[in-house]
Image (cartoon, rainbow, N blue to C red; front, side):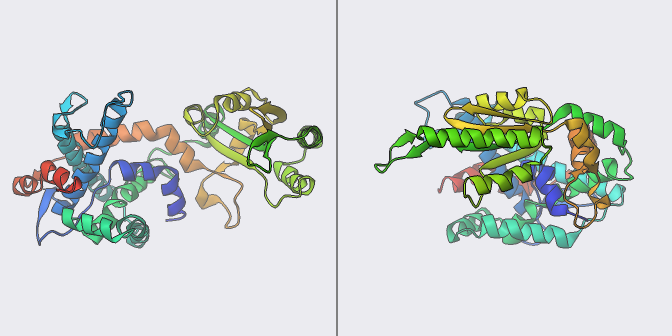
Length: 378
């Protein structure tokens, strides 16, 4: 599959982390949930329980964010509630849901004749294995104590995401069951996305004693004049931001430019915590296809925002892009933003109809209490 790594990083990684599940071996033939197509091993059930335990801790921390006396280390999770459930019951239900979700997508993949690229999945799984599982002898020993082998860990953090992506492409990708017309995608993109670029230059410096002080007037005037020049290069001379960066390196005798750019949904931009509210407002207030110079909190900015209707014309499937073509917007990523809620509702509906078996002996052997005890070092 072309550009699988890039696509997973774009949208499916969230699904991987939110719903990871797979098989590991704790003795031959041990399974927790299964259908007539596939099964979830005991090791996968354990991993999903541990993952759900960590999600529970996050929710409890969030619920107690304003409580200065709250200490997560001293908290008894068995006495906590999450979404009106006892926390232990919530963890159990979430772990089970992860298992059933994987069984569901595996069933749908077979029904739709989807073949998963096992070599790509193994390559990505090995990456996670190296980064997380083998990051230290301590973490490796911990997972082994839980009962999660290296193979099961590697598979558990990628398998759902790979199948999830293939199903989405089968439905909404090129020649898919519900492929979206170019005109509809372009309209959605122009109305719901934004694209911005800025260069930031601090009007502060550090003196010989390490204190933050204002630049002298001459340096401020030069920086302001240069930034106004860049604005005019874009607005009057129709130069590109790449042209501006070349000029910046010359003017400031710099090897790099303190710039930032992004193309994203407006809702994601509004929720971003990486930009100050004042900078976000300046970006949103700027006219399309225009550059502006402004000062925010002792920082000089050159801000440029794209004309989204024009930018939307660059949307195409990655399959249709030339090997050396980079100046395009992947159509599938935009389509998925359009259809994600619809797609996930479809998966939830299919999950609710799935017929599966439960191995009660396995589930009762590897309990939530057991995972909590090991996680706490008992």
